[in-house]
Image 1 (tube, rainbow, N blue to C red):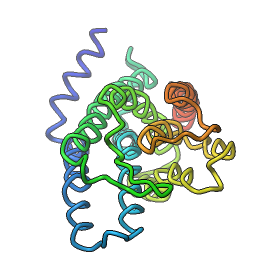
Image 2 (cartoon, helix red, strand yellow):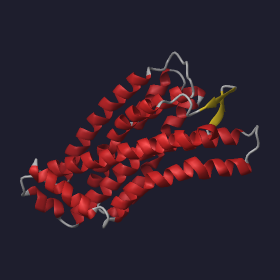
Image 3 (cartoon, rainbow, N blue to C red):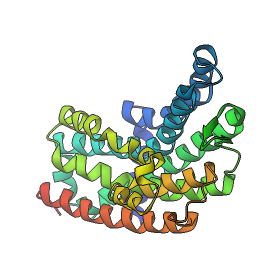
Image 4 (tube, one colour):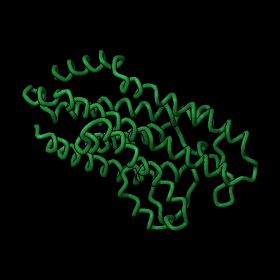
Length: 268
């Protein structure tokens, strides 16, 4: 335990010296400003009352803020691991009592905590400051996306949504050779953020929605979307069941990706 406490103290000392660590702290504030103030202000100036563009834009913004927390934190952790590889830090760790797998799990753990609080801050903050701005017309009814969501549901959602971190981080850390390749991978894989939006199409409103479940963020985002839109689709699961499946699935993927990272790094 002492070795991990020492690592934690070291990470906290370095957090203000590392631009990526600073971004981990700042980006939830930035996203809340964009989705809570900037996006609604732009729509107020550019959209008409009967514009479908307002509904589409707000739904996209809502799904992005639900999906982005764990994805960005996972990508930043992946970049951090790439930096460790470039500086041969992992080789040095491999011969210490911590081990590479222990070090990776330690970094996943504290990044998970940051992601959890980041998600709570972004979604909870959005509900606090912009509830009246997120009104959409869905199935010919006016729905407020944030009215039906409680702060308790936001906390539970954040606990599960942040579990995607090791999957994203270990894939980037294992596949990319440097930060440039890691950034390219993050950009190309960013499309997974938008996958849950497909469930709003008629094609994926029935049982075919579960085809999208191969993408880990589907389960958590779909759970909160159903509550936000007051969905009564008989093909949908309950909020708790979506999150339970999402938790099990992402933990399983994370374990596989951690082993893949260790194997690709040729370390233990």
